[in-house]
Every structure is written in structure tokens, then in C-alpha cells.
Length: 413
Ligand SMILES: [Zn+2]
Ligand SMILES: [Zn+2]
Image (cartoon, rainbow, N blue to C red; front, side):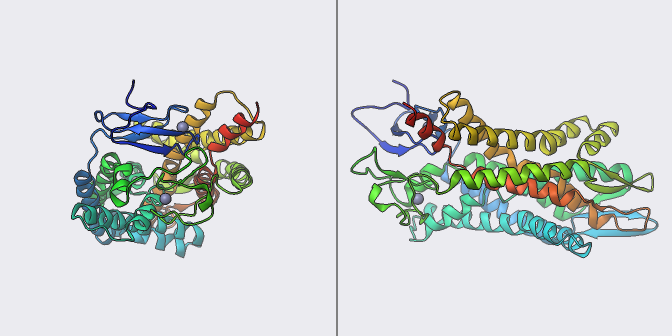
């Protein structure tokens, strides 16, 4: 039998509930370092290869250390008309605030400054405590919030945005990297390594072991730490992570529908109006999402043009269509393509955050393109609806409970 199977005599086996389809199953962790996938929907439940507590702790603490100079040191310097402009990461949000984009500046400040510091601070504390064998009672709560901020701490997305911004600046004006930019490159790469080396299931078991509930078929699986608890604890906090326990996410479909519809409506102005203004040949030039892609291709940055097209145009479309398909599946109690729908949902949930590239590019450019009426850059009218589409679709992916698709299909006997 394969490494994932249902077996009769468990050795190092735990009963877990799949968060994508709701199937209860026993995981055999005794063999190898492979990927353990759900028997029903094929979702990876655990990836063990290349993951360890020590490696994740090293990557997380190094990311946290590099985030300090990335936020405090000079980020970019430009020269024009005999003067220079410097930026630091936090000034990105400050300049947008002074130009009247209050909501946008707050969102960008949270995503690139506050959430990365909080996530990597919490993660480093939790992993460091476990590494030293100190099991504090609040570690479950801290690790839950570190995981919740995983989608919202966008140092890696900012790294891609920084590369695009640098390419755009290079063709328009004289530009130099500061220590802050070098530290950001290191922090962005190490944040990806942290993700790749972190075995969440192992950390949860180190915080508190999995347990076998009396009735596995009626038990509730915690959506945050995957602990199985008795059904009578519905509505109570999870004993391991403190998250409220529900058999299924309450009001999942109305919330997901409302958020997806709002995002769909905002997607229209987000693509019709100019996203930002840039000086090209010493002339302020506005560009929409698709014009920005064409400009990058014309300047010879074909790879970046493809990346920005995927992040800013293709991914939002995939998110809206994918979430719509999943919601319709629940409403029509469809039994078709459930594995494919679950995979689409998982993809939407994982890649949605990369659409923030374009707003971050604007954030990187604005503070260092403030010279004169001709040499000036900043956000355009589409920047706010575009960012709102990204934020709303990330939230709607979180409010959707994919197990409802499987429940609805099972109920149609
Ligand atoms: Zn599953
Ligand atoms: Zn939990």
C-alpha cells in the first residue's frame, strides 16, 4: 500500500481531517520523506521532503533580521535635473498618503512593512522556542497567527515588484540601489526558503500532539491546525491553536458570493482606467494594466512582461472564474470534476497574492519620481479598484469552505 493509505495496524499513524474535502483518514508517517496526499481529493496533506525545524528557523530568523535594514535603510536613489531623490520602504506609503490615496497607502504599508515583520517575528519565536524545547502555552496561538499572515506578508511579491520597478526606472532615469534594496532582495529570497522548509504539521505536533477523537466520522477538524476534536466542542476554541471550531465555515457561500461579485464589479474600472503615470522621454505618460505589459515588452523586458501579464491580468481572471465555479458547484450540488475544482480552489488560494505586483511597483516608483511636472510618477485612478480586487479575492478565497462542494455532492444521492 502507498504511504498515504488507510491501514489497520498503525505505526506512527494519525487520524486527520482533510481541509479541502472533509475526508477523515489515517496518515502513515513512518515511511520516507514523500508527499502524503488525501485519499479523496488528492490534496497534499503533508510535504516532508527537504523540511526541518532547524532549516525553517534559520531561514525565518535570517528573513526577520534582513527586514530591519530593508525597512530602515535607503531603498532607491534617482538623479535628474541635477538633484537626487531617495526613498525608504515606508516612504512608499507616506507619499501615496500625501497624494490623497489614503486607503491604498494603508494597505501597502500593512502588506510590505507591518505584516512581514509580525509574521516572521511570530514564526521565529515559535520555531526558536520549539528548537530550545520550551513549550509555552501561547505557542499555538502565535503559530496560528503566523500562518494566517502567510498570504498577507508580501515580502516575496514585493521582491518581484521591485525588479519590475527597477526595470521601468532604468529606461526613464538614472537609478541606484540602496542598502535597503539589497536587504529586501535577501529577505524576499529567504522568505521563499522559509515557506519551502517549514513543515507545519510537524510544528503543530511539536506544540501539542494530534489526538484520536472517540467518533472520527462525526468529529470536527480544526481548519487552522487540523486537530480532530469531538463534535460536542462545536463553537468552542481549539485546544491546540485557539481558533473557533466549526464543522464547516459559517455563512461561507453568502460571504464568498458577495466578495467575489464586488471584486468582479471593481475589475472593470481597474482595467479601463490608467493604473499609474510614469515619465517616458520626459513626458508624463499614463498606462493601464495591459499597456504596462506592452511597455515592458517594447523596452525588451519580455520575461517581466509575461510575469506582469500573469500576475495582473490572468490571475485576477482565474480567481474570479475559479471562485465562481466553486460557488456554483455548491449551489447546484454538482458531482462533476470535484477533484479539478478542489485543485482550482487551491491554486486560486495560493497564487492570488501575486496580483499585488502592480500596486507595489507604483509604490516603489512614486517616492523617487517627484522632480517636476514633466518628471513625475504616481498612482492613477485604477490603482484603488485594482488593489481592492486583489484584497477582496484573497479574502473571498479564505471565506470559501471547499468541503461544502463535497458535502453538496454527497447529499445528492
Ligand atoms: Zn481531501
Ligand atoms: Zn486548531
